[in-house]
Image (tube, rainbow, N blue to C red; front, side, top):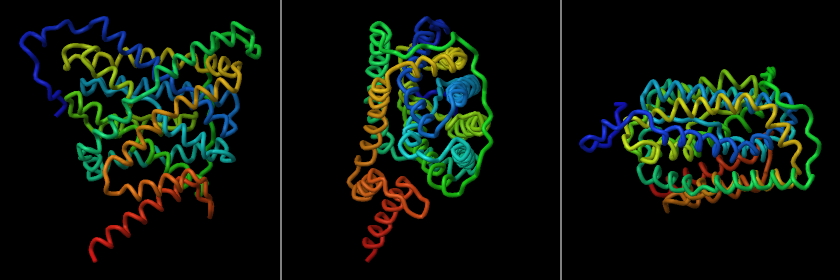
Length: 370
């Protein structure tokens, strides 16, 4: 079913289809999503050694992916289904992508996209995602909605104005220019695909897609899990060769578009989708310019903004990991192993953290049977 769960009060369904609040909600969601997390994308690109052209292509590609998939999904299912790039995925790349290089990273991006599409194609996997326990979904939702995105945007604006007002920036080169999508030939390095591609898939699903489904369900909708995963996975697959690391459901910006402030009638909130897509198409056209502007800012300001942007996924992940008593030891083991930065046999800390947690869960389950 694609219809909202909410019942409509008498006369509410006769509310005007297009309201100014729809446009405002879409604009706010786009600005918060872009301005609050694009520093992480730029940090990830810098860690991978991307050229300015590749970085501009990356920014444009993730904007195009969010715009295209949002437009299709919102109109196809008549729900406020909005997408974005994977913020925790960008954070993962920024933290563990050193020495990987763009070509091997693109190979990992492609693997992550294929895994998402497999979740859409194999119905048991899709149903497994759709049947996440309410307590788990609520814990992730609570963590995601506790967001410092407005603080990130405020620091970005205020800090940027101060830097340029006091002449602390490096000179800007050139004016506005259309970004060029730069093709990167993928290299399928098994160690990178396992050490970066698999964790990218896992964090994008666990920290972005699942909370996104929770937001839609909390607003009374039945999100079409398979269709959403297929659309975002296909967008990720198509755009990976030009730099897009992952297109996923949005959670924070989805909450802006699915609430009553967007439209009093739940059946008409899907109209935020086309406007959200329009704003992201516009932002895609400023990819090269945004990269040049950020390059002119002091590294300390970029680091501060990126650090603030990390608070939201960190809070959400810790809340979800420790929400239930069962499995907390395994969650702590995964967290501490990953934070340690341990690397062995070509595998990075995220993979070893996952293996440590799974091993403890297996041992705990085996002990319970004794």
